[in-house]
Length: 207
Image (cartoon, rainbow, N blue to C red; front, side, top):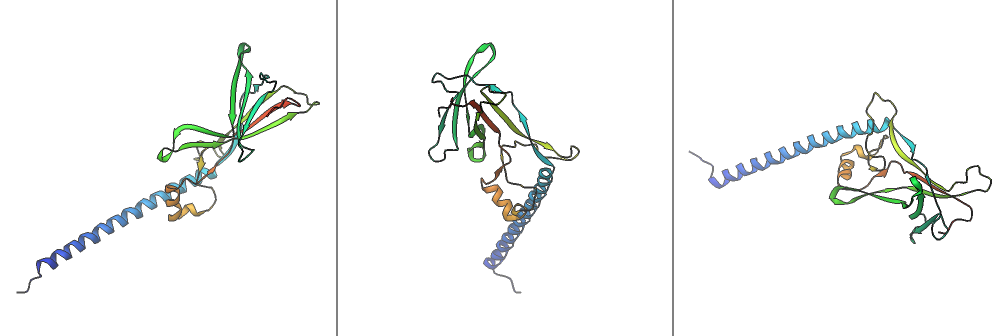
């Protein structure tokens, strides 16, 4: 009677176990990728039913600083369009409060791998002309927000300042490579920026 040697039988068993493990892993990855695709399709549909709106914050009345200016700009040398603007505003009971606004703003909540969330604001300084009706020095802020186009359908409900990788149109995010890129990269595009305008009379600017 012929019998398979023990070492060969053991090798066959190990090979069968290896094939079964690989097949199980492959099936799990396939199901996981399909699940991610379905989620992305739902998110894409929600993005397509979302529009950007701007909501005005209360206007902040500016008062002159000790140096006679209404604001002080600390711009970066690399990019003069970015930086921090310090100013003073008049609050209730005529209390003068120092404040600041930055082109780049950080939020407290941590991101993946503990990286801080950074958002970009659109900050502009505008000179109030001598013939304009409203010459009150002030800071106006329009906060960007999201709103559904059709209230009966799902729409994007996240932070519109955050970087969103999914677009409403076709792109590589629908592929397996795109899914993996979204998971293991920090790429993305900020949906919208807050529009901040510092309005001061002519001749009162000391950047």
